[in-house]
Image (cartoon, rainbow, N blue to C red; front, side, top):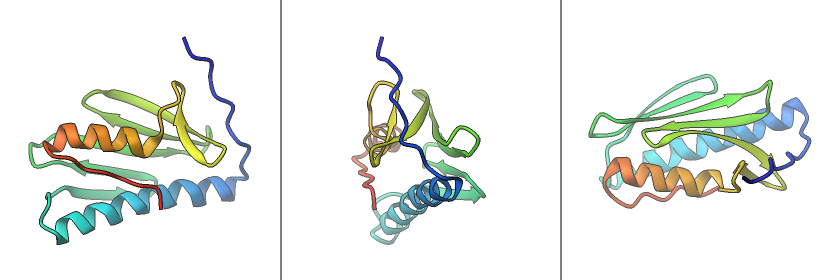
Length: 118
């Protein structure tokens, strides 16, 4: 069992800026893929919640959690909580947000999809 990673302390304003930048980066990547005709993933954003709908009707949901200063990711494979640790969003086992999102989106999208931090 891996010990919980110690989150980097953030002000509320810093948390919101960093979390919303992640969601905006995900949306920008998906928009670029749509322009390139790579894959048609529908997005719907309501505040701090971003829902990704894949062509096979599966979904990935990304959600900010301001009271906990976390990002949450829910996919077919399960749910994951990420904390901001020394400049990266990491889940308790040390997996990085964009790497795990890329893996899960590739599985659900049926092709290689790579999300990168902005």
